[in-house]
Amino acid sequence: MIVLGINYYFHDSSACLYIDGKLAVALEEERFSRDKHTREFPHRAIQQCMDFAGITADQIDHVAVSIKPTHRWFTKALYALKRPHKAAPFIKHELINGFFKQRRFHAWFNSQFVGKQPTLHFVEHHDSHAAGSFLVSPYENAAIMGIDGSGEWACSWLGYGNGTSVECFNESFFPNSLGSVYEAVTEFCGFRPNYDEGKTMGLAPLGDASRYINEARKTIQVKDDGTLAVDLSYFSYQFWGYKRCAPKFYEAFGQPRQTDAPFEERHQDVAAAFQQVLEECGLKMANLLHKRTGADYLVIAGGVALNSVMNGRILRETPFKDVYIMPAAGDNGTSIGAAAVAYHRNLGLPRTAVHDNPYLGNTYSDEFIESELVRYKLPYQKSDDIASDAADLLEKGAIIGWFQGRMEIGPRALGSRSILANPAFPSMKDKINAEVKFREAYRPFAPSATVEAASTFFDIEVEAPFMLKVCAVREDKQPIIPSITHVDGSARLQTVRQESHPQYHRLISELGNRTGVPVVLNTSFNIQGEPVVESPRDAIRCFFSTGLDHLAIGSFIVSKKSFELRATNYSGNDVEAVNEAQCNTPDKAQGSDV
Image (spheres, rainbow, N blue to C red):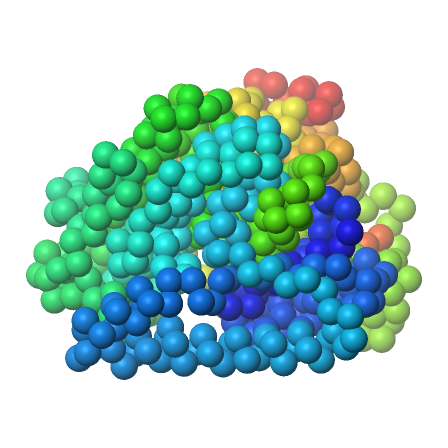
């Protein structure tokens, strides 16, 4: 039984193949179009999925899409009619745009499947998020919380899953949207709403929430049944205009930051206040779910589930033993969710697999990689042990592009398409932000640690394989790994199992053998504004357009001649600080055991 899952209606279009109850491959269209967060129909992703699985279109039994276009159509029309002076952008966004997306989909469907056509399943957007995430989670039963901007009309979803049965307790409907409120704040801070909410989350620890927290709390509340209520007098996103904040918001919080303008203390304080409000709302909804279900585990889905700071607080401050968030928790993951709902709920087939491995994309052979290096006339070295050789480079302070194995799904680089560095160098964060990623200096970088050593360096007792749970860096370890420790002492940790990614686990272990610190700085292999690299060509292009020192691609190493540790990259003070920190690591000998 083969199910093709598609997200084409919203941003981050994607496709996947669900074969006999197992997720075989999942790809995001942006990796091929090179248009980040693309809304294009995922032609390339669909074809690449079929090519990877070695199937043709006539072998597909079902197609599941993460939208039910006619769902709540009357509600939307009534909403527009009640606001005739604001109806034009709404009609364009919801009705005209939707019509053309549907026409494009059906044109593709009819041209792709000539003769016998697969069964078509339109799955509600929040079912694709919430129910779909549960159905691929490791839990037999769990509470479920879905939060995003808006789908067909819903903005949040609370319920419970047991086996293949999923019950929805209640939903919040547009414009009562926690995601839309946070998008408005993202715009206020000078970022792109619906795309750059991670920047707002990273900015928040630099601010003082107490300055605006009381006013921020007035804008949105969680009612006793878990639904959301927004004070719309602060906002204008409900009219689909060019601005998401209303004059009352500016009266309360001041004027917004213009793109590329310096940050004022006020902008940082507003980000801090609304980040705290988002966390408080998530905590209240999670606690209400636990009180109602008594479940040991929680599944969090939707774009807001990418707020890893909120997830970390839910893990620490609610009775749930652990939380599951799929690696592509936003709209890119709804292709997976729609396929899971079609297979398990619509067709009644049992759950046989868990989506605990994010490495679902394409891979490239050494033969193909070497042919690309030769094609571009690049000098390279063949490595007999790429993990060990890369660890040697990291120990010396090199910044490397790491291109290994199957590509990850989701916005976080998880050790297949990553930029890596030694987190012990104090200036590493500033250097990568300025010379490699070309992004805001305040933005933090995440650590990857072996699962065996994670609790030694980080205050966390569960696994975090998808980098979606922020935790504290243990106080005595903060001077040892300064470049991944955010200003508030936190880190967005990824724990790495040998079974999931043997090569990446070994690299981290090898670095631990040399330094006593089995932790690497890990950020996505791209520059700001571009998708993560997909192909060797993408990797080569990014390598030569940034300040990377080496490229470890397959079994090959490409180097820039300018790499000299002391003369070019770091001052003597940096090297001395690293040496002193590593020498003072009380468990340095532990590295050889990891």
